Structures are given as C-alpha cells and as structure tokens.
Length: 415
Image (cartoon, rainbow, N blue to C red; front, side):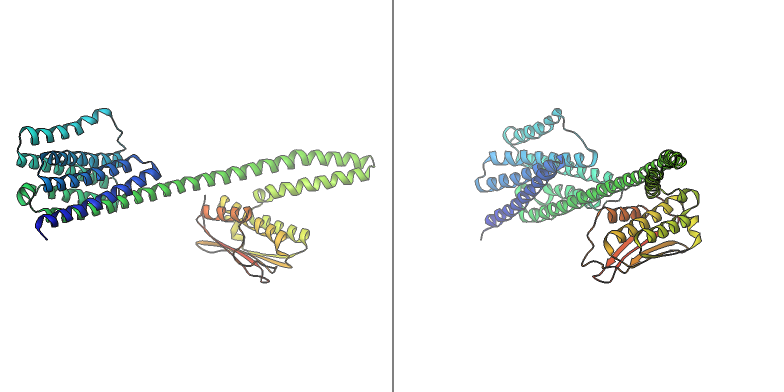
C-alpha cells in the first residue's frame, strides 16, 4: 500500500469521526435548541469538509480543492470560537459577524489564485487556525476562573495545546507532509474537545437542576408557611366567630326550652370546634406542642376506639415553632392514616429529642401493606414537610404486621 493511500485512509477516518461528532451535536441542538450546539455542529461539519477537500487535493492536485480546504479551515475555526463565546458568555449573533467568514474565504482566494503561493496559503491558514483555537482556549480559561468546572479545564487545555499544535505546520508538516502525524494529533484533540464539551454541558445542566430544585424547595417552604397561616386564620374565625354565634344561639334555644333545636345547634357547634382543631388547634399556639399532642392522641382514641398511647419528653416545647408544627402535622396525618386504612387495635406514638436529632415514630398493629406503600397526598405531604427541615422519613409495613412511620429531624432545624 503506497503512502498516498495510507494518508487518504487516515484523512477519511478523521473526517468520519468529525462528521459523526457533527451529527451528535446536531441531535443535541434538535433536542434542547441551545444555539451553541448548532454552532458546534456547524464547526465540526466544516472541519469534516475541510478534510474532504484536502483529500481531493491530494488526489487531483487541483488548486480549487486547496482553496476550498483553506476556506473551510477558517470557517471551522471561527465557528468553534463562536460556539465557545455563545456557551460561556451567552453571545448573540449579529449580521456584521459575517464579514469575518467572508474575510477568511477572501484570503484563501487571494493566497491560492492571486498570490499562487501554497506555502503562504498553508502558513496563513495555520496561523489563523492556531490563533482562533488559542483564543477559544482563553475563553475557557476565563470560564474556569468563574467557578469549579472539570469540563472547562479539559477544554481550556485541549484548545491551548491544539492551537500550539497548529503552529507546527511550517516546521513539521510543510506542503502537506506529515499527514499521519497531523491526523493522529487532530483526532486526539477532537475527541478531547468533545468529551470536555459534554462534561461542561452536563455540569452546567446539573447546576441548573440543583438551582431549580433549590427554588422548588423554597417555594414548598413558602407554600407550607402560607398553608399554616391560612389554617390558623380560618381556625380562629371558626372558633371566634362561628363558634360564638352558635354558642349564643344554643343558649337562647335552651332558655326558650327548645331542647331538640338546642341539641342540633350543639352538635353543629361541636363539629365547628372539631374542624377548628383539625385546621389548627388553639392549644398548639397557646400551650405548646406536648399538650397539643396529648389532646390529639386522646381525641383520636375516643373517636376511633383504638388504644393510642403517647411517649414524649417535655423538652419538645423548646423546639423552634416551625419544627413543632411539622411534628404535630406528621403525627396528625399518621393517625388519620391509621383510622382510615389500618383496622388497628393499638397505635403507639413515640417522640424522642436527643442533643442533635428529634426522632418520631408512629406504629400500629393493623393489617399493614404488601410491597411498597402506595403514595398518596397525605404521605407525600409528610415527606415534604420532613425534607424541608433536612430530615429523613422511613415508611415500613408488611401484611398482618402493622404499619410504621419513622422520621428524624435535625434538632433546631427551620424551613
């Protein structure tokens, strides 16, 4: 196999690799519509065409292919730089930028067809490609200084070394020699640039996702606070307004001897008070968490005829107000779940406050569940309240072995 065949095979392999990369970036652009993906796709496509043009020149020695190679070299270099600027600085396209591409094409025409100096043409192309590649490396070095980014470091080193590699053209590869060496080095740099780009994009995507998750957590905290404030307001209005009115009506009916009507109003009054306590028990605000929990457990036992016990320390009352509300709501939802689904005879509520953690467990002896518990709005609400305080939640159950909800919250945590 002669040297020309080997060199053409190497150039063809490099063109194939580069063309595939262009298709990958084009697919990324179609999926996300990020403009820098389109620019990278165009840059790699122009680079692949550049390799095809130089292969045609090696075969035919026609100057038109050398001109096309020189023009594609300048355009691919400019597109690589433009993609880097779009990604790192959010640069926007302006029509006046077209003159840069036109200048690259015009210089290729001048060097090949007017000056007719292949050495000048090759040297100028090498300097242009090296200069733009080094500039691209500088863009990513600046990106690196803005924050920790493995992808930016990879791209900065890749484009810096690649730019220096382009400068070896007049020394080691004059007039098209040293093709195999150049192809091997270019393939290495192309692969490194692609890996670095993907790492950088994935890193930025991860940071964007983390920022979005943080925003959603903040929104959840605000919604939970607003929910508690609204519950408190409605509970107060039911207790102070509707409750007082119904109490006055019942007194009037009792004084008039209308016992049946008075009993009906009394039942309505009891329902209003129960609803007020479910929304926001006044004892939680007036006396604190421990009395509120005791009242809730006792009321649960009376309503459901399920033997319910509470074990907790008096130090719970020293916890931050938001943490007390979360503990109360978790126990409330857990007991509601027992009443609706467990068919239990006994339920135990245990809350322990250690130096750095608060541990909460609600366990019943009901029918349990098979497999993973089906998530519903109540359990999802419990999990959301716990996670907003940086805590953990474990839900366990087995057929015939009851159901257990266990939570841990950092002591002193606030949403």
